[in-house]
Image 1: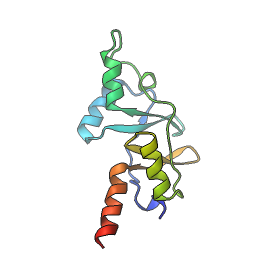
Image 2: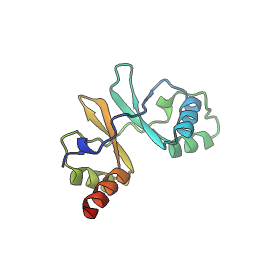
Image 3: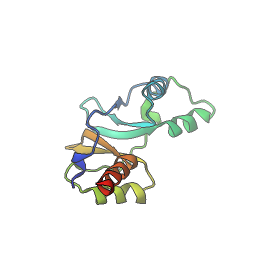
Image 4: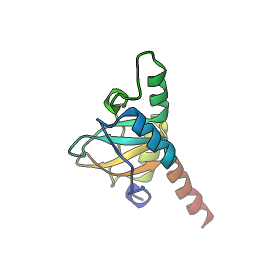
Length: 127
């Protein structure tokens, strides 16, 4: 099964110039722990997670008014829509991450999480 069959297609993304403060507020409101970050052409440039923001803000001199570009992880593990579910699951597990963006031509087209994969296998097992 391809990951495109279980990925979330409606994904909240941030721009690199968005402020840390805004991103944290939105993540709390939307109840998300992280999101892809894109440039002005909507190309993936990184990922931001709440834990990184909290670590960033705990350092003296780091402020909520800084742009997300100062906080994001730029080495992002991604998947393509045609990758199978096992391959993507192994990427998540081996990189110790809980979600990754699904991209096509550097554009974010979806997001898949460990929870999505577990749900798929639970549903499959129960059938």
